[in-house]
Amino acid sequence: MTTDDYRKTRILVIDDEPDITLLVRLNLEQTGQYEVREENDANRSLSAAREFAPDLILLDVMMPDLD
Image (tube, rainbow, N blue to C red; front, side, top):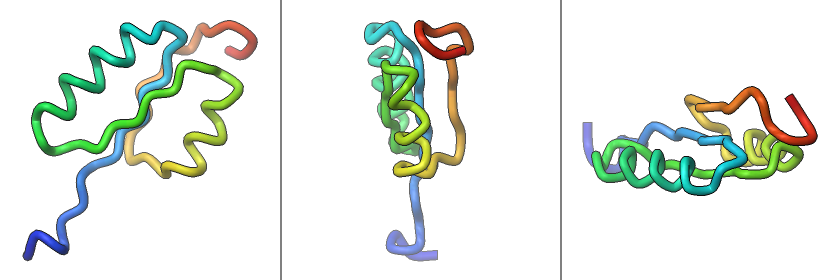
């Protein structure tokens, strides 16, 4: 397998606390194995998931406006 064949695992982190999503993103990206996107707005998280097509979603299930 060449480096062109390798795609980093995509992770979408959704939480209404920007400090939490930043901390998670920085720690995951530091490994070099993950491409991480943050979303802090519950209403935008659905479209972010469609656009980013993550392999994994880390989700705060109790958010303002949408649970």
